[in-house]
Amino acid sequence: MRLVALTILTLFSFALSAADRPNIVWIVSEDNSKHWLRLYEEGGAPMPHIEKLAENGLVFLNAFSNAPVCSVARSTLITGCYAPRIGAQYHRRSALAPMPDGLRMFPHYLREAGYYTTNNSKTDYNLNDREMWDESSNKANYRNREAGQPFFHVQNFGRTHEGQLHFSRENMLENRTVTDPNWITVFPYHPDTATFRYTYARYHDYHREIDEEMGAFIDGLKADGVADDTIIFYYGDHGGVLPRGKGYAYESGLNVPLVVYAPEKWRHLLPEKAGSRVDGFVSFIDFGPTVLNLAGVSVPGPMDGTPFLGDGVSAKELASRDEAFGYADRFDEKYDLVRTLRKGKFKYIRNYQPFNFDGLFNQYRYRMLAYREWKEKYDAGELNAEQRQFFESRPPESLYDIESDPHEVNDLAGDPKYASVLKDLRRRLADKVKSMPDLSFVPESIMVTDAIGNPVQYGQDQKKRISKLVDTADLSLQPFGRAKGGIAKALASSDPIVRYWGLIACSSFGEEASSFVKTAKAIAANDTDNLARVRAAEFLALIGETDPQVVIETALRNSKTEVEANLILNTATLLKDMKPGYKFEFTPEMFPAEWRKETRSNVNRRLGYFVNGE
Image 1 (cartoon, helix red, strand yellow):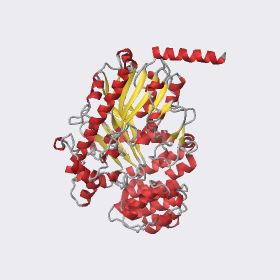
Image 2 (cartoon, rainbow, N blue to C red):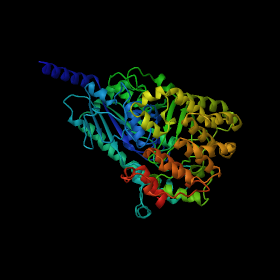
Image 3 (cartoon, rainbow, N blue to C red):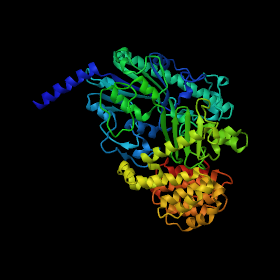
């Protein structure tokens, strides 16, 4: 009797859902910011099928991936949470984080509500959960649902992925592009060369191809008779993919295309009329809550995002949204720590390790001819100031007017006219990373050993400590004369992570902080903390005081984990790549065999660079 009753209840749920709940489809292209589409930018790639959706839907002008790289972006999407709050901010993960207490990946709630959930086929999440998909594979399809059952389906398209641009010089010469390279407008931070023009043109061609694939998928919805009941999202999974796009927290890495189409039956769920271009800001943390809201499912409290479509969302409220928070941490073996805040037309970028320049070697990135040529031209002194910046130290903070400077090349942080804007955004961002709190202020090696069991609880337990780490990092935003006392106190702290950040502040000031050379030498020689010793050696090497090889090699031999070793190797790479360029003699035997058993492990990537230069 219970089985019969359950069957009747399930059938009733399907019937109710089919009548009262829309199907929802995500069409996802990989690695392309909005800057590459004609729908957004003059000279962008034509994508007629997506443009057709836009005519009868909404075009979001300010849609943001919170992270500029795949696994972190997708972890944000699937949880509705900021990745640095939940321990999912590193690409690729060193360890899977658990889901926050009381939260499941959002398709789980759709399944509970009677939806058939399918994903074709990419996951790449940095968190562990199960039972959110009825099917997840390259064969997954909504057609396998029960009769009348509503569905949520994700269809990924990879033609625009970064790996598609890893072609050889011979391949470039042998394969003409449909897009004429002579018609290309090269971004101001790129050198205008035949290689860059060809790479742009080929990337435009891939957009044309992917649009055809998407068009065929949309035609399939029509042929299956479900199009009139299906809301369609098209978006890019983060920015892409020419140099300074994917992996970097500029608009080219974060500002994605987003089109949402609703058929006549469900058009009332869109807060603006069909064909509108929406200025209100939406981020990946909001996508899961939005799908749940469209499906009539309550949004779980632990999510950070809020719905931007469906019941309870007005055009006025959506238009009032004007903030987006972004984050960039480790990409494969390359470390960074950047946080961004867009508010209206202004973009604030906080480079917490400004000496860790953008173009630091990354094996996967430098497979692209354009990356390699850009570096060659920098080394040859053939670039202008805008083009050189990628290979030089950054300021600790930058401010851009995105309306007048969409490519972020005119830094307003030093302009007195914008002092009040700078101060306001600096405060807002500091409050943001403290309130989360942001786990990246604890070195990844410590997070993996101490926090990975429950990152959210660890963050709450360490909230006061992390706030102090943020304040220590922010000493670099003050004039050195004012920061000096705070740095001295940090270097004398009993907390090794405070010392660690005090030394990063020294490196941020560079030679201005030379009064701390004696203290830094003592830390490099005698500190009980491995990473503090490395940061001291880094500071001393950056200002030309001490050759860092002995300290770095000793620290590597003392590393307790592969994650710790990779963090140290990032410092070695920086000191190798920056002038005057230090030499390191690393051998595979320095590292445990288990850290080297995977060809693509981060330690092996770095060893390849030091041993073979690639």
